[in-house]
Structure formats: structure tokens, C-alpha cells
Image (cartoon, rainbow, N blue to C red; front, side, top):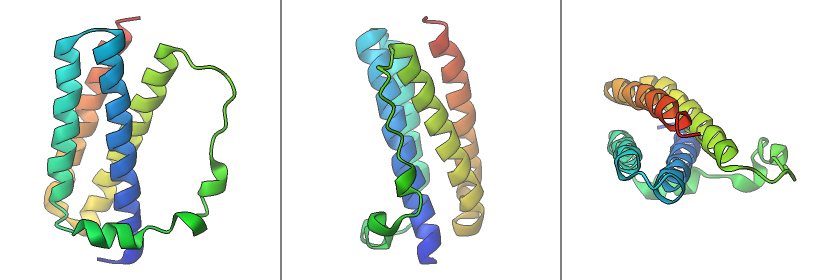
Length: 136
């Protein structure tokens, strides 16, 4: 698999997984909703299963990383505004949805059989977003 493709897959898998973990913890500690927490946890685990379908050793993904020279690195957001729970929820759900879409698109090149899995994850995140926003 081409190094650039590995970088896209690695970055977006990490982005999605981290964002889902943030909203999972909001459901767990702020909403105190075990059912919603479990649903986010299942999506996170399903993301890992779909990711494993790329059949790329972790070593190759890590070797493909080039954080120091990443042209997108300078665009880091340094928001000084103190976020609220809802802000964290929405921004992380959007991040996970976007990363799932990227994985869906690039899986067409790397592992076409996984494309539908990433699409299902993205649509589950849309539903969880709707359900989560009702909590505010």
C-alpha cells in the first residue's frame, strides 16, 4: 500500500477513535447514561474491526507517519474559549463523522470490502448525534 494512503488511513482512524472516546466519556460521566455509553463503545469497537480489514501491520502505519513535516500541522486550532459539554460533544461527533467518511472513501482504494463498514459506522454516528443532542 502506498505510503500516502497509509498516512491518510492512520490519521483518520486515530482521529475517529479519539473523538468517539471523548463522546463516550461525555455519555458516561456527564449524562450518566449507560445505554448511550455502550452504544458509543460498540461503535468504537466496530471501527477497530473495520480498520483491521485493511490488514496493514501497525509497524507500517507508524513508519508512514510524518508529523514533523505534515503540511496540515500548522493549522492546529488554538481556541482560547472554554468549551461547554455540548461544544465538546458536537465538535467530537463531527470529527468522528468526517474521519469515518474519509475512511469510507479511501477504503475504496485500500480495502473495498471494508467500505460498507465505514459507511454504516458513519450513519450510526449520525443517529447517536441526534440522540445525544436531545440530552441538552
